Length: 410
Image (cartoon, rainbow, N blue to C red; front, side, top):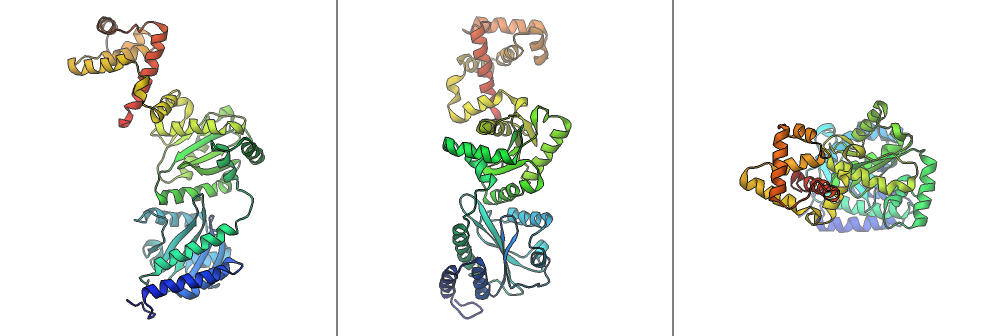
């Protein structure tokens, strides 16, 4: 098989390896970009993770808005970036692999999109403009070779100080040693002033979703003063300063809700921790916010609104929760199923109302005497002293855990 230039596909790919290997020997990325442009016969743009221009070949305007914007201003606007991120999200393959696009905003200037990334972060983005040429069968394979070469070069030349995001990740990781955590606290304390809250926004496992989230993280310091964000365990984790105990007032709620919308376009829930004064507490507040996000279906959810349900969610996610549920709950549930009674919900309402008969009857929408009758029958049929303090506490925690385990089939 031959392409339009007369080379066999395998020969062209093999030649690409040699060309890019030779270019890697040079001292800068521009030589690698130029080599790729000359080899492919296309225009190439390389930006960093924040869409600031690193290299462009050929170095001139071509009459295309994005290309010419980078040529003139060296950075893309947020609106343009958002449009391209939407294209990544709409990429049917949902991977980091290079892909070709010729629809929508770029229909008149088709191009190949790709990202340079490591396991930890995105290093940059490339756009390969076909400049009126037809896409060749092996262009995407050659682009992947180009991306791999860029990854090698950019990783080896990234010997700069860790970013604020890196320090926040170090602070959150359980395996970070004490010295590393203290260093992270010192660094972050100079950037953001207390009091703090942590927002956690899970984003899912898809490569495109992660790429979109990585970009959002990179923009936090540009959009929000007194905030640092990072990707950690599949979630966007953001520390906001200057919050204090008043962070649930209308102004602070509006701010955090706006931030939740900005940090993800994936309609995820953002959990908000309690406020805290010492950044060394961040790993604990992270757990608060993460578990809260998993409990809620609202755009934004506060820890105190759901506590102590987070404790039971943690147990359910990390153990066989049935081991910690009072046996009588299983007996009541089975008895109700067979006899069409309502003993389970009655005892639950009585426990959650702190043994207030009037409150329990209102919760159940039945007469007080009905609650009294059902409780007497529970006492007669089942071996449970629900009026004793220790048993009462056991039952409350069991009902909480039962609710969590039966939430959406968990």
